[in-house]
Length: 451
Image (tube, rainbow, N blue to C red; front, side, top):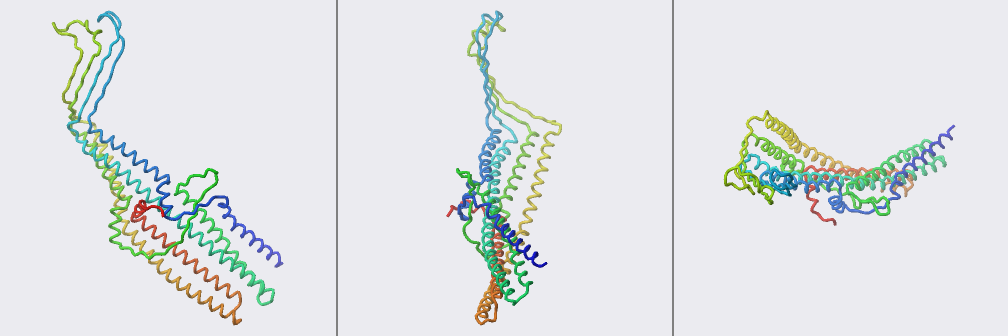
C-alpha cells in the first residue's frame, strides 16, 4: 500500500519540474538585447509613446497660445463679389465686380491681458504635463528594470537551493537504503524539494512580466524578421544608505514636483479664464474701417442723378469707432464665471491635499529605509553565522561527526539567508526609486546621456 503513494509522489515531482521549466519557454524564441539602466533612461525618453504624445502636446500648445493672443491683434477681412448684369434698367448689361474690405483694432477690452497670460500658461501647462509623464514613465521603467534583475538573481539562488535539496533527497535515500534512517526522513526531503518548485516557477514568471513591462516602457519597435525582441537588463542590484532631511526635502518637493507644479499652473489658468469671462461686464471699444470699391463702373455709369450735378460713386470708405456694452446678459457671464470658479476651488483642494501628504509620505519612506537598513544588518549577521556554521559542519565531516545531510542543510540555510539579503537590497533600490519619484528628481535623468 505504501508503494503506490511513493510512485505518485515521484510523478508529482516530475510534473512540478516540468511546470517550473515552462515559463522559460515563453522567451526562448525571442531575441534578447542587453541594456543598462542608463540606456533604458535614454530609450524611454526617446521612444516611449506617452512621452512622445506629450511632446506633441507641447507643440499643439504653441498653436493654442496663438489663438489666445489673437484677441489683442487687429482683424482684417476682404470680400469680392463678381457677376454679370443684364437688362435695360441701368443701361446695357455686362460683367461687374465689387471689392469690400473691413478692419478693426480693439482699443479697450478687459479680457485682453487675461487672454495673453492664458496663452503663455497654455505652453507652461503642456510642458509640466510632459514633465509629469517623464516622471511616471521613467519610474515605471526603473521599477521594471529592478524587478527583472531581482527575479533573475532569485532564480539563480533558487536553482542553487534546488541543487542542494536534490542532493539532500539522494543522501536521505542512501541513508534509508543503508538502514540508517526511516522512510519519513526521505519523504520530508522530497517535500522540501517539491515545495521549492512553485518559487522557481514564480521567479521565472516575474522575470518575464518585468521584461515585458520594461519593453513597453522603452517603446521598442518590432524587428524586421517579425521575431519578438526583448531587453535583457544587465548589472546588479546595489545597496545604498539614504538619509532623508525631511524638512528640506518636503520644501523642495512642494516647489518642484511636476504634478504639483502642473496643478498650480492649472489654477492660474482657470483664474485667467475667469477674468476673460468677466470681461463681458465691461464695455468693448474698437477702431474700425470699412471700404468699398467698384473696379468696373460702366454698368453703373448711367444711373440717374440723386442730387443735381452728382456723379455715380465708384468707391466708398468709412472709418470710426465701435462701442458695445451688454448691460444685461441674463446671467450668462455670472454663470460661466461661477462654473470656472468651482473648478478652480476643486483643484486648489487637490493641491492642498497633495502638499499636506508630502511630509507624511517622506516620513513613511524614511522609516521604511531605516527598517530595511536594520533588517539588512541583521541578515548580514545571520549570513556570517551561517558561514561559520557551514565551516563548522565541514570540519565535523572531516572528523566523521557530521553527515552529508548536515552539510547540505547548512548550505541551504546559507543560501536562504542570501536570498533574504537580495530581497532587502531590492526593497532598498525600490525605496530609493520611490524617493526620486516622490521628490520629482526623475527630471534630472532627462539630461543624462546613455553610458
